[in-house]
Length: 499
Image (cartoon, rainbow, N blue to C red; front, side):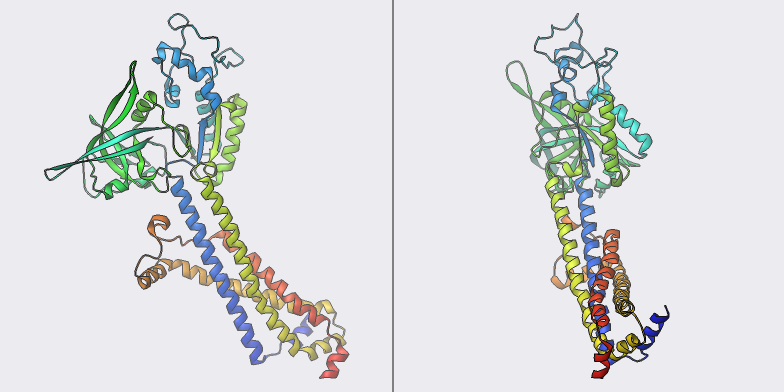
């Protein structure tokens, strides 16, 4: 410590040369500017990624439990087709959960089971395993460990929507082949998707806490994507859903009368403007008559699970898989998180690749900026050769000499981090104003609200801040080592002779 104090006394005089001071200020300014740019860029892109994730999982929950092919081939699923108690029709998951009997087959009233029929899967007591009730039981068990976990069965079906638009004595019709999603009442974000009504209507859906209450009436209430509203559809407009139901001779068209109860924002849902939200009774009726095949590969029946936080998702997925395995029904179910969804997995893979690329580019820019420290300290070493030589003649070790310049490098890095972080916080706080100025200068919106929302994310990313706080001092230390090694290798006799 004594040698370090002597070194500081000789190497850091009260008055520096103008050139050294100017270069030091410019070096700190350049690194601070890069830190500011990296923090703002990574924070905004991270926020955009989170917003897109929220939109992609707005209707399709972050975690999904769907039946496998083994479930559909099982005795449990197919036996309804032979049972009078099931009206000789296979049941959806919701119907299975509400059914009083796991095995509706009756040897007295139903036809004999064919020899090629799958064998029933029974438990140790000889009872038929009910994969649906067991799955619900295991999910309910998880609620004790993960408070706030919500789940609900869902169904997807398809039908032709035809609306009658009566406008000032003129009647027109709107037809659209649509996909129908059963109302996910347990979805905690469903209320956020509902587009506020511009005028009061007795046919409009109501909000009760985190649930949407559809109105009662002779027609089934439906929620349409907001693009319908943009194209002139009103709340209260009537129409019907048409679908084909097979009969003994041919397929007959069936109709379900509907009335528009509201509009919602579909976000980045792959089916986009063709997905209608309807009561579960509607999808169940159509699904029973004619099963629908989703064009994007999304399973048409299963469970949606909404965790309280996305951070809990990996743990919930792992715990649920373990519970299903212990219950002996793991082969009947497939657990998929949002990263595995058919319509989103490519996009999320691109997100991860872009994030890695952006971080790499940010590291390279920081490295280039920190190279300014090398120029400053090399200049300082050249200016202080005589003082360094005197210190070495007095017995100061080379490590102490090198430590002085390395400390200067890391100090400049830390100072730049503080200045750049403060500028980044100030910029993010006034980001909307800056975007407005940019939009006014361009004469159009700088960022499309459809993809980026009405406001850009302005929260400082913790990951970006951690990256900057670790990378900048480390790179500054590396930059300071080169001049430090140069200073430690100065020979006192040569340096003093040259002076």
